[in-house]
Image (cartoon, rainbow, N blue to C red; front, side):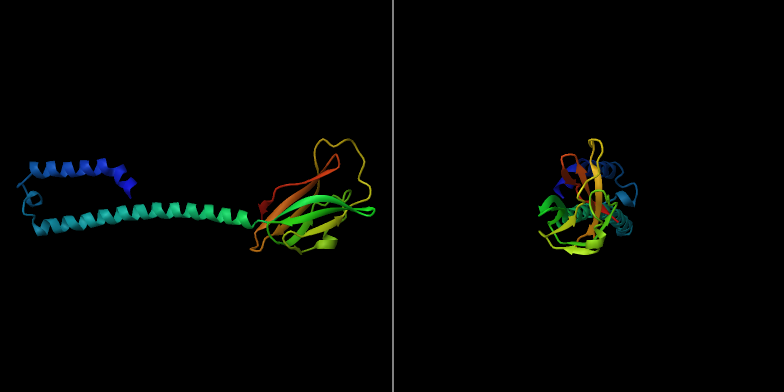
Length: 194
């Protein structure tokens, strides 16, 4: 409110000075500029002042609501970021088999499904984990092929699998697991999806 007064103080002072100059200049020429104030005339003036004040109030309410909406949107984004689960990836070996271990972080993962599976690297994960629920800090292991496809040295990561899942509030996300020469495995940051 103080900022508003500072911003428009010059306007208010100019309007008051203009009214005072007009009142003195036109004093006694008609009922609007006479003293004591005539109730019939100044009653109408007060009605118009109420209309002007109501319009100004409506304008500031609209501005307030738009700022509140922006603040609510920011809070919602922060909240969604706070509950967003994500996977980390690790290649593990048990005896003579290799597995791609996906660990759930930050929250429980629900409604998990897999797409764009590169069966040259891993087996079809939908056969093992369709609509699985992975608790926070738990992991699942997807069996890997014994022999990876041979070819030229990779200069960019090969997408191996797309993982789509949701959090507890049914916000869906997707992450892409990629293989890069080394052998090293990476997983993309979670992206919101439909």
